[in-house]
Amino acid sequence: MTHSLRTDMHTSYLDRRGTWRDTAGRYALLPLRLFLGVTFVYAGLDKLTDSAFMRAAGPGSLGDTMRAVRGSSAVPALVDLALKNPVGFGYAIAFGELAVGIGVLLGLLGRLAALGGALISLSLWLTVSWATTPYYYGNDLAYLMAWIPLVLAGTPVFSLDAVLPRRRRRRGFGNYR
Image (cartoon, rainbow, N blue to C red):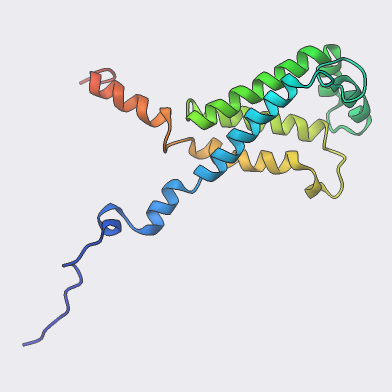
């Protein structure tokens, strides 16, 4: 008679819910999401409260910044577009950053918010920080790369995106059988 050691008798909490690696993988994007969300909310509020930034000309203004980077920009047409109405463009960027940050923090339309953040970062990289050398000193490219995992994965944990479909199913919406 052979005796074998049974390993299936004792299961820990993590064994029942998945492995530690599964749990860590589920929450892996949460720190990135919090960082990007808080940063973009802060950036939007910072622009809205900086009277110098929201001007067409003068020290610290968006207009002067755009004129200074026009010659080194990868896409001068984007800079020209901003220069048509620097104040309006400044408000668009600030409110866009706020919307992206709030959307990602709440997990409301998370993929769309992350795509917005990626597009803002891409436009800033192609205009303002394009000439930064070496390239890794420019933060806009790093932000662009940081948004990509959230564009792909969305905001599946601690989010309105995860809660709202469950509520609709409980109420009977979306059940087409």
